[in-house]
Image 1 (cartoon, one colour):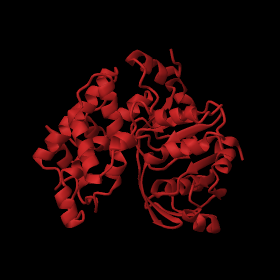
Image 2: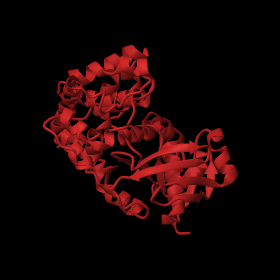
Image 3: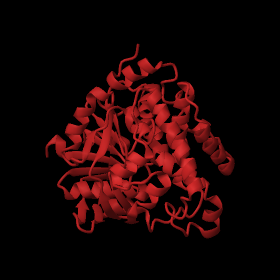
Image 4: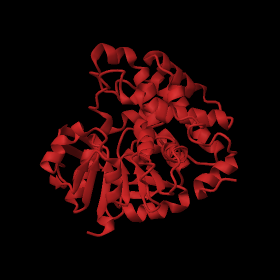
Length: 367
């Protein structure tokens, strides 16, 4: 089988299982790699994953290899799909550093904010001698979930997903490789664009936090984006959104506003976020998280809000609203999300001017 038909998926959670099975059904030779073997033992025994995709490609996706060895996983393919929570990107980079080749293309699904930068900085810290292409998607292409130890369900495939490489002048190489399986990916500019257009940073942590009492009292038994978004809650989300867009503007970027994103993604319009979110029919029926110990906070605060706030502080933008949500999260979870999160120091860009940062993400060159 040709090299373009060999693809490795790292991660066997909701997204990784669905992607591995789907690509196998598309005729690709897929290697599934997961750090904890017990999570993939049944898949290995059966040799694949059952995928249920109503109205789409369903069936048994036979996998070429199932392994807990990162070395084996990277050996098999040139295109590496990393489908793990963004809190795991640093660990994956650390484990992969000795085995990555110059011809490898690594795609983070998604990067959240600063994923490719963190992955690259980690490889450098680990002494990686090669220069693989590290890239990130703005969002995950699937809406999917795990249905059992070797079963996955796919609800929807997005029609358009921006992706960007670090450096951006190699994004076309990523697109050429990934289009052999998913033509839905489009050029996303650079990794600052994809990271600062991370709408989950705005729509998830603050919304959950402002509904803490209701979530804990009902275990999430209410419509998160409808009942949870009152006029006052929406005003807070608008403040956070303005700060995110302003950080992007300070870096010379034009980020989409929350209103623009809702119109683009769902054709949902309104005079403000309250109206637009209530006009998004797809939000109806989506329940709130059952607990505050949820990825909307434990992942989105350190991997989305902290890097946006850190960029703002580094480049002179007021981010008091975002910082307040981060600090409330620290108090609520008795943890230091600033220490755990993706600060400009961890992203390896703390010493760069805006001009130097732009040059780095576009060309990979440092002055």
